[in-house]
Image (cartoon, rainbow, N blue to C red):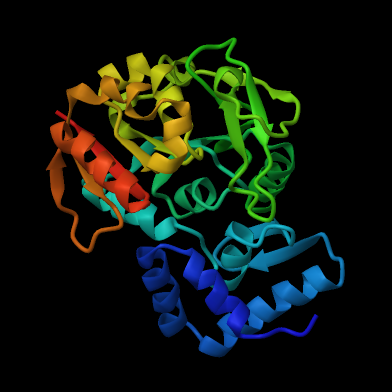
Length: 302
C-alpha cells in the first residue's frame, strides 16, 4: 500500500480540536519529516502484514499495527494523551503521586510515562482487553517497571459480580466497550469479562496522594458506583465525559451523584484550567450531549 499524506489528515478530522492542536504542536516541536516518515512506516508495516511494531522514544512500546487510533499516534508522536495527564497534574498542584490508578490502561500510554518520568511512584494499570493487556505487560517489562506497575486484566464495575460483555472497537483497540448485560444492545458481543470494583484499592493506597484516571468508553458512571469509599475520601479524579457513550449506561444517573463532595471540575481540553462548580456538571453534560462532544474532566474534592 502506497502511503498518502491525506491518510493523516483523514485521521486528524476524526480527532477533537484539542487533540489536533496537540498533534500539530508535536509536528512543530519535532521534525515534520520524522512525523510523516513514522506514519508511513506504520502504514507500511500494516500493509506488509506485520502484526506488531516497536516504538522507541522516551519510553519503549510494542504496538499493534491493527490499531489505527492510539497506537498509530503513539508511534508517530512518541506519546498519546500524556499532555492531558500533565495538565491534570498541574491542576492538582504538581505534587508527586504515590499511586496512579489507570483504569482503561490500554498498552500503557499514561501509566508507563507517568511512572518512568517520576510523576508517580507507582501505578495500578487495569485493562480488560486481552490483547491490549498482553502488550501492556510487555511494555511494562521493556521499560523496567515491573516492580512499580501492577497490571490487572479486568473490567471495572459497580459490584464484584457485575457481568460485562465485550463489544469490539474494530481498528481502534482503545474503543472496545464493556457493557453490563442489562444494557447490552442487540449486537454481537464476545465472552464475559472478569470484574473488579475500585473500592478494592481503598485499603492499599494513600487516597490523598493518589489519582484515579479513567477512560473506559462510557463505563465511567458504572465504575464510580463501585468507588464509594474512594470518592468519600476525596481521591482526585480524571475521567472522560462522553455523553454519547454514557447514555446507554444510564448517563449521569449512574455513579455521578457520588461526586457531590467534590468542589469543582476542570475541562482539560479548554485553553485555560478554569474551575467550574460541580453543581453545573448536569448543564455541562446536557450541552455536550446536544453538541455531540466529549471532554476530559479533572475533579477536585472540597
